[in-house]
Length: 248
Picture 1 (cartoon, helix red, strand yellow):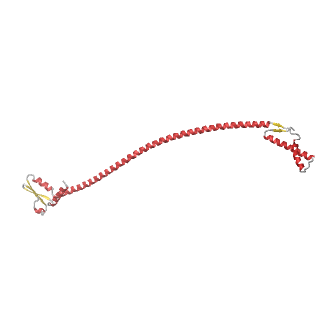
Picture 2 (tube, rainbow, N blue to C red):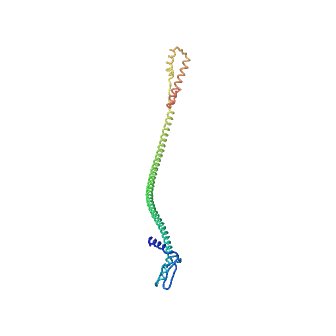
Picture 3 (cartoon, helix red, strand yellow):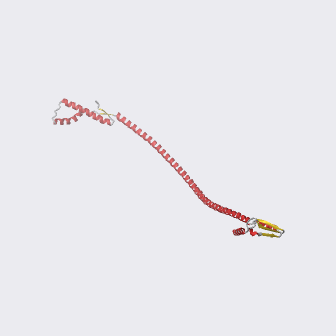
């Protein structure tokens, strides 16, 4: 039934005779009356004849206005409940569609994130491989540097030993040379009157200056000059590693 049909039926039931419908019967007939004497102005509501009179009367009596209105109210209540359920179902369906849409977007984001993570994993793997290569290069370089430093240290050690040996040989040679020079003795026989060669100019200068020499002064001074000549000569020869023997 459409909503219009239900409304027409409600209007008809509302306009029909109210109250309780009761059975009236006689020989060969069936009828429905209102239990209120004022209902339908006291007239019979419906009369039924024929072989189905009783069955038709029962049906019509059971479909009285109160029953019809009660059925319509029940149907209307069910329609309201159904409409509410349909609305709820529509809301749930919309929510499900919205969630499915969000889930689709979330799955798409997850897929993009997974792809990004996979790319990052590949990049990390590449970086790790590069780091390992660089570390190996660095280790090889450090090993080469260490070997070079070790070689240079060994070379410096060898050079130091060679230098020390050369210095030792030079020192020994110098010591031998000094010993040889110290072992040499130069015998010098100073002339007996060599001091007079020094004294003569000095004495002439002093005499010209008015100084008078006696024999003792001259002898003493000449002896001191001779000693100084020997001292200077001895010191000069000693610096050259030569011992002086004046033969005295």
